[in-house]
Length: 235
Image 1 (cartoon, one colour):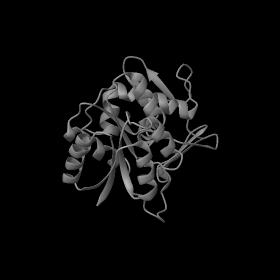
Image 2 (cartoon, helix red, strand yellow; image 1 turned 30 degrees about the vertical axis):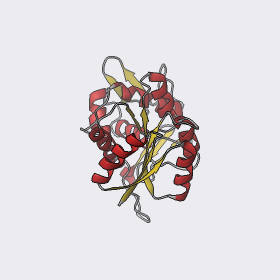
Image 3 (cartoon, helix red, strand yellow; image 1 turned 60 degrees about the vertical axis):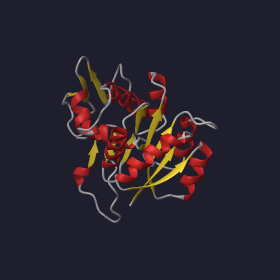
Image 4 (cartoon, helix red, strand yellow; image 1 turned 135 degrees about the vertical axis):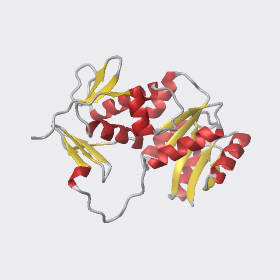
């Protein structure tokens, strides 16, 4: 049974989330504060996804996420009552895989959980990856089997969703994808959010890769349409 962690200081919200996740086959662990959450995660390395409220009483969900990302890449969905773009950018910039704004539909939340986990297939130890699992460009290497990215030989840390977005673009260099096409390809058909979430992830990905939106070497914006991958393949 997959294990999830709900972090929220409001018991009634945890109760609703627990009911829907349990009905979907999850073993659910709960925490009411940020420090409790970090303690639970240290004691339960088998937790596969975290639903993390931003407005916690002892420390913000963003602080919890920063601490967590120092030691773990477990998928995290931020649950927030703050709707301004800054909070979303900050959250995604420190490694959140998705966000949900309160009030939310519990069914939507479960759909988001399933979509994030589909992007994180379990690793198969000892499996050798075929050559088409690795894409090599001028300064960039993307290894899907190991889920590793490097720029000029330097490892780059990306969230699971940012990695999948990069892979989708890098797999078809020169092709222009609209935001709707990227949502369908990377997020899945059951994504409920705003198309601008693609822009947020492109920004965080560019920042991690050291790519300049004004003089792109890796991902170019196609005004009024979407994005395309422009790095040159290794000859």
